[in-house]
Length: 149
Picture 1 (spheres, rainbow, N blue to C red):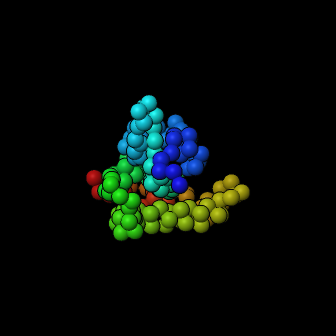
Picture 2: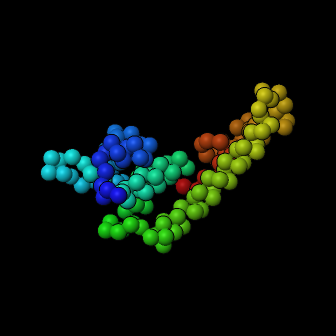
Picture 3: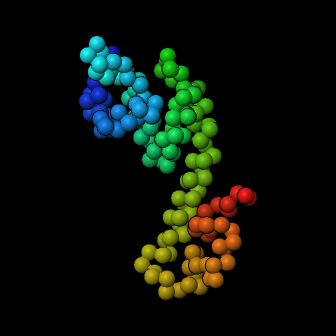
């Protein structure tokens, strides 16, 4: 098995465009070595990092947060199960909250599909007189309470 990959090989293997890989590298999310001709070469372990980046983005984690998490992983060795466990523990409560919110959105909006809000007495999103506006911006009936200022 080859030790390193070109950017085209990493793009093909990971399903991420070469332009995105260059962007990830610029942000410090992944690392590439250089050949004597200044061509990028990626170690195979970068595939795991790219997969992690893609999954984290899919669940709403920002690239800045992803970089902070990856910065805590070792540079000189492949991350161990303990390394990944430590990283996931830091995000667990946030992901649990996202799951709770998505479940609430799914369940509360079931009644809205095709309703056209003809029955505001039963609408779970109805806020007569905008009484919830004092609690802060956004969908107060769906979002968790805003932290005190």
